[in-house]
Amino acid sequence: LAEDRLLSEGEYLNSAYKVQDYHFEWHVEQKHLEGYLFPETYKVVPKQFSSRYFIQKQIDTFAKRFFNPYRDEIKQHTLSLNEIVILASMVEREERNEANRPLVAGVMLKRLKQKVPLGIDATSRYSLENWKDEKQFLLALRNPDDPYNTRLRKGLPPTPICSPNISSLLAVLTPRESTFWYYLHDDNGNIHFAKSAEEHEANRRKYHVY
Image (cartoon, rainbow, N blue to C red; front, top):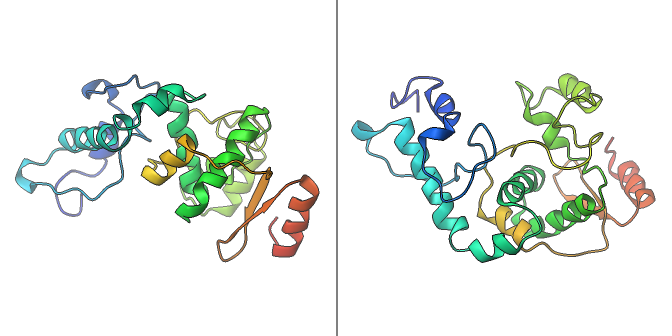
């Protein structure tokens, strides 16, 4: 947007922190709008473009595509809307294959219910300046004071770690039950589930994931 001179650099991010400037059909429990800025291809009119207009359009699309059509399912869920969005953002970041997302969501929800640390690496990468900075990532994994460390801390992180698409949101609404408690990804991004810690460790050795 800045390169196309529709906004000044940093303007969109600053606007996403002004929660009070926007209209919602639900209560937002965080200080910024990550999670509710629906990812979609938007048509805009350059001469009429503004960050506030665009962000409201993303919020309205979240309502149109998810909140309104699935209002009853959201109300009946064991998690609040904000918790659903947080978990969906983790599913989004963890699994790129949309067909696997309901199964991943099922594993996460089961661990959450049993109060077992979720162990999601993507949450520890969220606050890094560079997502692929392995040195800082390993430091974050060992930091028990990091609220986004889901290896050492139980429960959900304080905010979503991205704005999930509809497949991730629906995966949390309609998760797939299984006997799995663990999963990991190999070097090709393929997911491998496990029913026990022993089986998970065997997968680590088999696919060289540490």
